[in-house]
Amino acid sequence: MKLLRIEGEGITTSFRYPFFMMGRHPTFPMPPPATIYGHVCSSVGEWVNPEGLQFGYWFSCAGHGLDLEHIHLLGASTGSFELDGRQYPKRAEGNVNPFKRDLLFQPRLTLYLNRPDWVEAFRSPHYPVVLGRSQDLFTYTDVRVIDAEEAPAYVENTILPFGFEAWGRGTSVVMPRFIDYERGREVEFEPYLAVTGRMFPESSMLVDPGSPDVRDERGVPRKRAIVLHSFRSSAGGPA
Image (cartoon, rainbow, N blue to C red; front, side, top):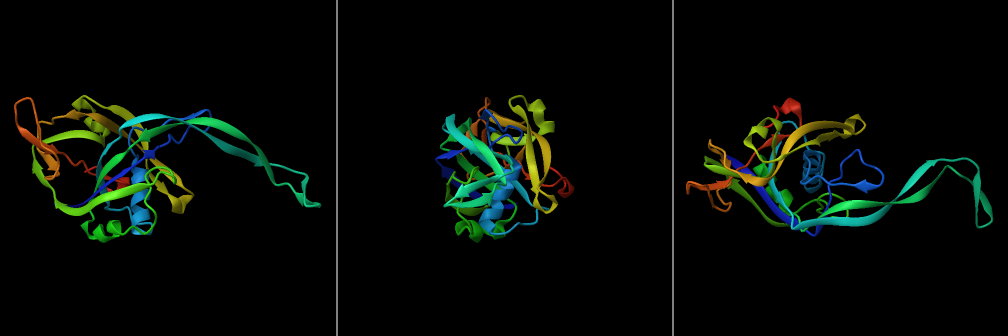
């Protein structure tokens, strides 16, 4: 199976939980699918059709910490204000509110897409490459088409369909899978298993033949698994 493999790295990133607004903005341990979709669209240069589009990834970071930021909370207002001797109607007013944001340092991402024909789009991205926030600049270090194959595999530093929780290690998370900008930014959520450890599944899986070899407890060499997901449930769900 031919897949597009994009490798990249950055300095910082943060994947905010969507329901936290004040006090502290925690981060998901790895990018939600909706973040990956936006990242892909940025490189291609348009809102691509999510139907049939599948992705998988490997993600790691060197550490995490806190940053102090602030936001301006605005509300409707009445009255007027003076500027250069003239009166202007006041439409909104607000206050500066400090908060703490969780950051991930030195993120590294290997992204797989079932669109090998997009290789040139990622070698020459349409928009500046970021991962996470708009200020989290990201750099592609290698973009190529690979021949993924079925083989003994290990799974690490990725997300799995929620039904795979019986494998053992991992944290259950509910992530935004897709944000529909044609329907007023309507969000679709999906439960996943975020795996930051290493697992050795019994059956063969789709693997990246260029990934590092890891031997299991029996000495069998394994390659890193590629677990593909879909952005829309109508596209068939996780592969």
